[in-house]
Image 1 (spheres, helix red, strand yellow):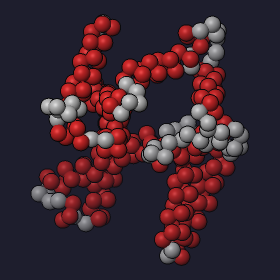
Image 2 (cartoon, rainbow, N blue to C red):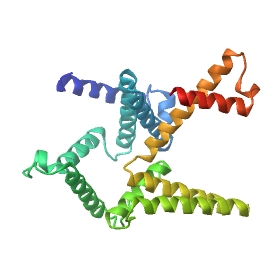
Image 3 (cartoon, rainbow, N blue to C red):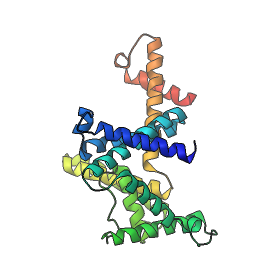
Image 4 (cartoon, rainbow, N blue to C red):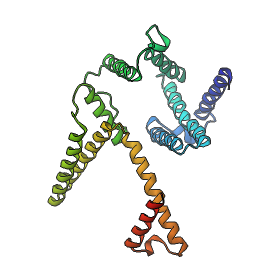
Length: 265
């Protein structure tokens, strides 16, 4: 697709959204939507993009990227109606930001920097942008709406950049064991708030260990979810051949089928 045809397709999508939101003849459902009602769809579409990438389903990825793009167009249209900004301002803003954050590509800065140095520079520029926007704290600007595991990782990364970090991976692993023991003691107390508090501490520490191991906790958990689903489906398939369901099998039988699926993998 040429730049011209891409621009034409984008303009057509923007016009379609304008028609859908037109009080005179638009879609009743689309006219009822607000920033708050569209936001959950945006989060869902982002996850569906990630899912298509993980499955390497390129047709589905193309479709899901379109759905995600629609969310951007939707928000921009509502903002334009309210007199805040339009889609052009969104596109121009991110374009300007990318140019400013890549002086080694678009400016006079040398291209000899490593990817690691470029990452540090990128973070420094983002920190400067946050300061200009009035954010002074190290952890300011880490969105509350992020998935909890992702937000934990971002908070820890921010803190680590100013030196608040573990010296060794082994220290974090020891902290995981400590938090697990504290969770066990909280369970013994029977106090729900204490149990939830210690469980959260354990999860937070596990995210920290993953960060030290250069792992994305969301990606690791998605992988574990997929593994669980895949193996459980093998249990169902094996039982189905015997004309039974999991509800009709014993835990021992299902555990044996789980182990068999694990070995086959």
